[in-house]
Amino acid sequence: MNTITHPFTAVLDSIGAARPSAADPYATETQTTALLRRGADYRRERINASDMVTTDEAAELSGTTRVTVNAWIKSGRCIGVAHLRRGFKMPKWQFEPYVFPVIEQLCESLGTTDGWQLLSFLETPLPALDDLAPRTALERGVSAKRIVELATAHGH
Image (cartoon, rainbow, N blue to C red; front, side, top):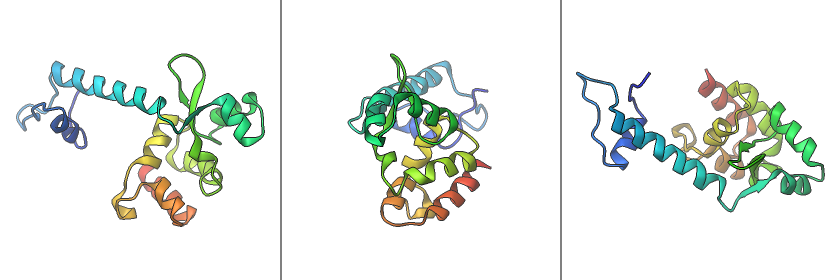
């Protein structure tokens, strides 16, 4: 389906594209192309960000092997996003003691092991957290239970 709804209207505004009208709620080909290009640009930038590590680097950080890290990604024990070349890139901060124990619960609550969905949830500011991202809220001492409850609500 090619319908533009909130929050995509904010993206359209940011790229200077016209919003769809009430009479025709479908995105034009140009709007769709612009949205897809912006999404691809974001993913490329996020994968190349300084806080992203390879599975080899993550294995070294966590004192395990790359094979184990790959199994963790597959099972939802940690976040990995497919790298354009090979393997996965992972946010380094997920190995912090205030985040790592929560990842598996978030996967269950959100109903996914998809790295992009998990990363998006953890990095998107939420009104229920006074516009803090869940990752930041965890860092500032908000309980893991509260974050998991929000993930459950978000996942359903």
